[in-house]
Image 1 (cartoon, helix red, strand yellow):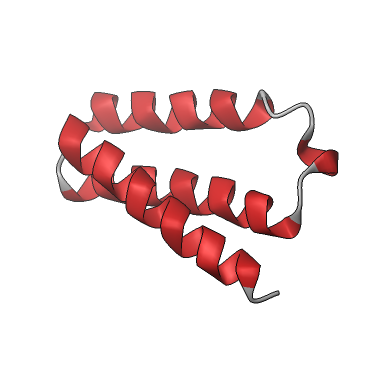
Image 2 (image 1 turned 120 degrees about the vertical axis):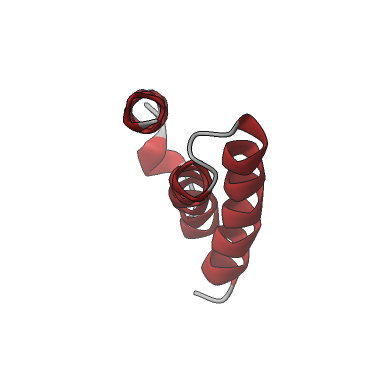
Length: 72
């Protein structure tokens, strides 16, 4: 289970570094990306690496991050 969580964290880290156009993103878009990453990791931890929990957490985190970035 720790291996799954580590894999999820590494995948999200590589995905985040792939955002070469981070500077051209708005604060709302940046907040959505960060929220999705944090939500995905949290969902993976809560469900012991479950796919549904990881994807669900990323989706919910992305929506929350989008709304937080909207208010900035």
